[in-house]
Length: 287
Image (tube, rainbow, N blue to C red; front, side):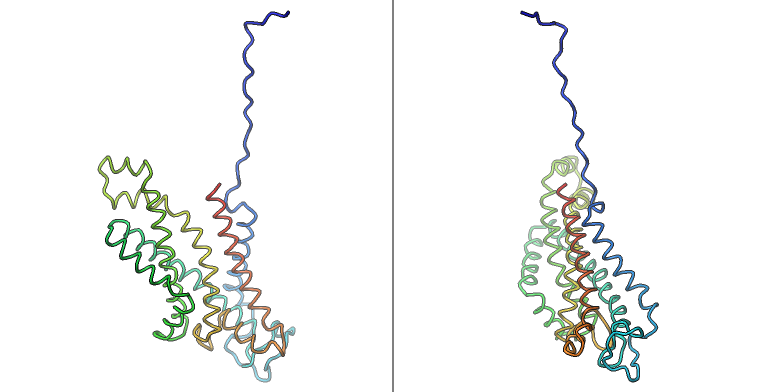
């Protein structure tokens, strides 16, 4: 029988290195989404400078021409180059996505955050959000367009109005959750005011879901613009947009199905890019 060595020690545990999860935009989805959106932005910014045709120019004898070396996507029923109008129309959709959506998000977040400071104001704001969310987006778009008329301004106002209650409720829920944290309680104990706590402690820790929703809402804004253009209450002729160019091309699919490829492809790439960015950002939140 072998004696036990008194100097022997228990085997030390082996530390296993846990690989760090990649950051949001190193993930495949986030990177691909950024590339897709970046390509569309580049087309909108420099594309019109590379096309020799003006998007409003009516070219003599060029009615409903098919794709060719001179007109890569053909011409429309008013003898205008489809590619020139498509590239110019990208700018309108980018303006709506990168302008109207952040504006609606900013207003919604401001209203939602301020409402948490007062119970009576909070109830009133939530009922207002209920009213806005009760209307389907297209019904709301038709109603606003009937009041202010069709056009780019109408599309922007519709997108802003649609986004306000979405972001307002999202931030309110995040604020109420963060407000129960221990560091907020500690700030209250030392005598910090509610406004100071909201600005310096609560809001900075409540913005993650807002950033995810921002990317999602940008993709929705593209659909809203397209739907309003199809209904005739979107961007007013002769101004181009992705929805306006697609609406025109749909009337002549029997003559040349290729007319719709350009606006459909750009819309799909832009929406897919925003969706992938949102998915990657959402995955990073749960990492």
